[in-house]
Length: 136
Image (tube, rainbow, N blue to C red; front, side):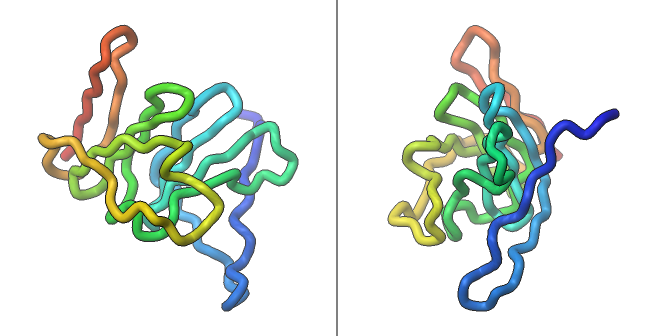
């Protein structure tokens, strides 16, 4: 296949001047031009593939998510489901949970009850307001 688009990492940390590690573990499109990437470093990054900078447009702040992201699913243009390695299934809103700051005033994210074990895939029903997830 032919490479269509390539992401760039975040800028180096301003205090240490070290590059932040990238370890993508989940990908999904939020719309035709917005790509979500979940990382093993407990972060969700939003990329605008139309942008020339190729860096994340926004990302979840440190401490918002507690475990490695293993699955992502777009629900609508503003919300998406996040599954992690411990079986937590959450729904995040771009307008409320993501930004360009490393600090967040939000200390916890509501989670669905039920999944156990590492979540590997999340799928939204095309017509009904249902989410299905599968894991180990």
